[in-house]
Length: 192
Image (tube, rainbow, N blue to C red; front, top):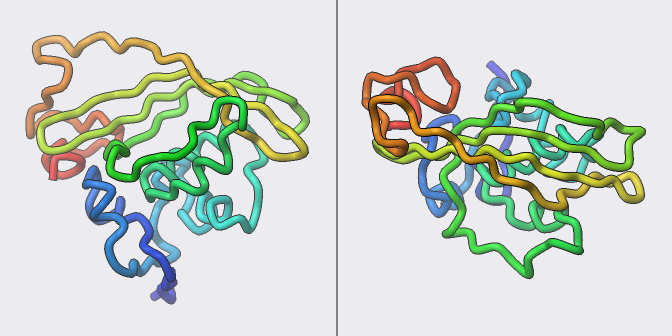
């Protein structure tokens, strides 16, 4: 069995309680193991993916990697990281932890440029947020720039999502497939 890692500050519990209030995520110590998947849906383990970027041990190598790490930071409530990776020209003065949405799914749709040798890039994504029987989707094309070897989020254009046929846009049935993309039923995933 992998040795658990103890984090000195509260970190995410997305793998045990998806789509819970960020204030719950910040309570107490959390034990993480090497076997937990990264919340950015990269298919990698958290420790091999976004944790190294969020902790500052390495920089995001591409605009997509920064997008994924920022999504994981939103899930984890890592507000300092979000502000550090926001371009100064568009960065807000601060973020309110209690206003952060309960993210529970990320899908990268496409990228343009944004590689290590590029100065700028675009990442189009869908992020799913939810709570019991309420699901919303943020579909955005985000702009990133690379300055002094550091990728930074600049801004994005939100794309309106058409409502699902047969249901109000924000309602999901308990036995429907979860819109976060996990492949599970809603009641066994984000609807818990």
